Structures are given as structure tokens and as C-alpha cells.
Image (cartoon, each protein chain N blue to C red):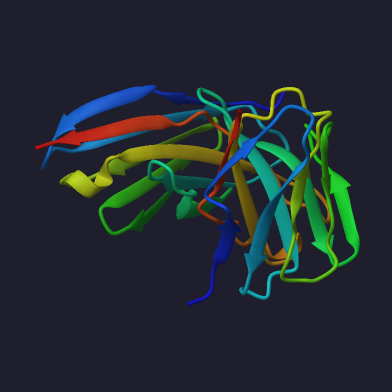
Length: 114
Length: 114
């Protein structure tokens, strides 16, 4: 069964601190993996896209890693800001002819406290 | 600015009533999608359309209907057959699946039962 599991479910950190969110998946055949940020009451916004051959990709203070052998990904947030408070969703895309099939994790809810 | 517009932001449905959620995009994307988001669950695909005048059922299509008469528009009707319609509905669009680009999301419509 294609599944994406994220941990922790929720996290509280102090402003300025770093944190790492985890994603494990059992999706096959794998195409690529994405991390999305979703603010409360808004739609998800893409942060990073990683293909099978990429190990690390950065977008500002966000750095995603991918280990395709162990089927794990992480999202590291550096020097957190209050605006980082949101849900972070790991999404794995199935290799599918003619259709982009996405399998969503349930998200990690991050609260950055002043 | 290009983007996806969903309306209304909040919608209330009476028992036995059909309601229609609007989704418009000006990104010139071929593919469009409807997802449902429930607390503690990952996004689930309701319907998708890869080209005008064509659409396919997703994982939870029962009780929903769609149309794709224009490239820019992909409205979703929640029918009275959908017994548990209370959820956050997200519309998304993307370039053709073969290009593996990210899906862009609207800011959602929250549907509640009166």
C-alpha cells in the first residue's frame, strides 16, 4: 500500500532555533518527492522538489534531504522565524504514465514561539 | 499575478442540497485537480482533469461531480449523495504530468453543514 508517514505530528520550537521534520514513504514506483508548506486556512505552497537522484536541495532556510534507498526524507529549517509556523506536508509522486498521482502525508504542525 | 482562485472561501450546505465550488486558474495549466482535506488526514483526490472536456474519478469521487468546459475553470459540485461533506476543499493545477512540475493550489473552500 502506498503510504507517506510524517513525524513528529506537531512540534514547538523557540524562534531562532533549528528543527528537522521527518518523512518515511512506501510509495512505488517513485517519481519525485516534494515538501509543501501550508499556512492555516490556506492552500499548500511548494518548497522543494527532489528527484530520485538528488540527495539534498535547499530553498533559503529550508533544506530537504532524500535517501531513496531507505525511503526517507527530511526537511531542515534553519534559524526559525515566527512566519515558519505552519503545517509541512511531505508528498510523494507516483511514476504514472499520463497522470501525476500524489500521495500525501498527514503533515507536521510546527509552531515557532517567540 | 498568475494563480488559482477558489470561491467562496466559506460555504454552508443544508441537508439535501447540492452546492458548487468554483475554481479558476490563469496559469495556462492543462491539468486541474480537486482534493478534500480532513483533520488528521492527508489530502485525498476527488477528481482530476488533464484536458478540456475530459475528467477522471479520483480516490473518493462518490457524491461529487465536476465539469471542464474551459481550460481555466474546473467547478466541483457536492451533491446530496455525499453524506459527510464537511471538509476543506482544495483545487490545484499543473502543467502536463509528463513535465513533472509542482501542483499549484488555491486557498481552499471550507464547506460546513447547517
